[in-house]
Structures are given as C-alpha cells and as structure tokens.
Length: 111
Length: 114
Image (cartoon, each protein chain N blue to C red):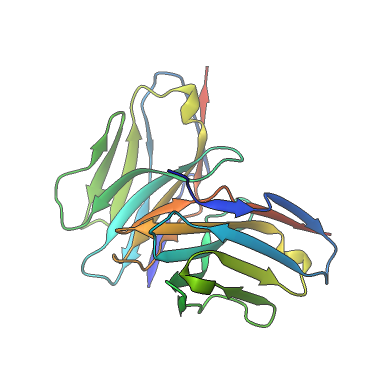
C-alpha cells in the first residue's frame, strides 16, 4: 500500500515568489493534515481537513497561506508571497483511527 | 490546549545500551493519547509507540517501551539494546483523541555510537 506522497521534495525560491506543495494521502484516509516543521523544532499544525472541509485552520497564516482539498482526496498548500521566515519543512499527514501517517515532507528554502 | 515538553535536546549512547528519553505533557482532556515518533535524517516520521491514557498498563513494542506516569504527566520512552538504526530525532506527542491531530514536543536527537 502506498504511503502519503508529497511533492516537490525540495524547493528553493526567492522571497516574494509563490510556491505550492501537493499531497496525496493514503487511500481511504478521510482526515488530512498540513504541518510546518522549523529547523530543530517539532511539527506545528497548520490546517486539518475532514474530507474536503477545513475543520481547523486556526494556525494557518491566512494573509499569505491558502490550502484546498478538492474532492476530499489530494490537497495543495500555497504560499504567496513567500517570506524568509517561511523556510521550513512542510509535512502532510493522513490519519486512520487516530494514528497519523506522514509523508517525507517538502523542504522549502526562501532566499 | 495541550503542551508537550522534551527537556533533552540531544543524547548519545553506545550501541547495545539502554537509553531513556523524557517527556512531560499537560492537557485539559479527560481522555487522550500519547505517542513517540521517530524521524530519521531526511526521512519520514514514523510511529514508534502509542499509549492510551485510560490504560494503566505501559505500552511495549519489541525493544521500545514507555513509562507512563499519569499523575506526574510523564511519558518516557525506553529503548533497550539500542542499534545504530535507532539514530534519529524522537518526538513525543499528545492528542485529544479522534482526528484532532497531534501536539509535538521539540524533539530529542538520539545518537547511537558504534
């Protein structure tokens, strides 16, 4: 069974540029999460989806971050415009009975 | 709200030794879950072990076991017969159950020396 798939694995952009990350969760997992992991820190939740509905986006910086999960499967996280402080690893996870399964993450470097 | 604290930024032990990673937490939930996740360098995070707060018995998974002290809000991970492949970041996390998601600590970098 395929795990959580994320792309791209690495992205380097200049500040003020837009960037998007894509996530394909494990088949059948209705809950999808986006986390941000800063260097040397634990992951922090950005947004949680139940099917196509964002049920917790309280930690998502809505002035520059947006996310969508069309048809309740794949999800995209976008940053526009990116700032230097957005450099981090963006993790996607899906869950089954409370256990989270993580993708390998997308490492963003903003120059 | 939940908080998770890991007070050991880094630990180093020799191969085959036993090591214990510490974690304390705080939660307002009456029922909750605790987890240890392993994150090898540049690889995905994987679940090591989980504990349901209503269960008094400590969880074990092969060489990994926990010491869950509910009154003290402590949840430590013991790794027995440590192996080189155990080298990784280890994150303690808590959840209020269901699909709420996890609150993570800052992690402990464990290094197993040959």
